[in-house]
Image (cartoon, rainbow, N blue to C red; front, side):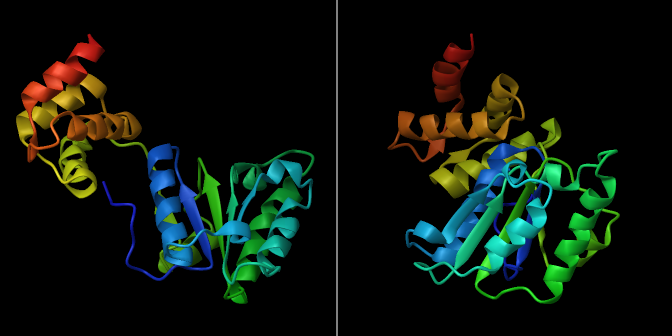
Length: 216
């Protein structure tokens, strides 16, 4: 499973594609840090629900992106959920499909001071828009983790987020108790890291005592 961070420059349009909310949250935190640093984004962070923008939602969103913030030098516009912008509808099919073209046109002359983020459960790889974004690292996949990847993810997450080692037996026990749910696994790792703060590793004994007891 790929890490949420990226070494590529942030493109003007980023798509968070997939249903894994934990990865979405991680990507958004990384983007906010990259754009605003440690500062409070204030008015520079704008969240948009396209269902409240009517049939011209995409044009309205792009107007929002192009409009400079009065109180912040940078702007991060998050559209969540973005799926309705690309959903086919019998009565409005041509308009829906035109939203991709509007984004393609925007990418030809984007504003330097803003980043647009689309949060979508599903995303088509066969479109020109996807291919253009994929070339510049504009697609961040947020797909659910497969069970086979859980052991490696647990080990990396324990080390990178909590500074703890965890052996394969302990990781396997945690994966068996929780499953491949990233958010629940991370919650348990956070509690386990505090359970024995002076220990360099998360032990099988700790998992059985804390997680196993709760699970049973």
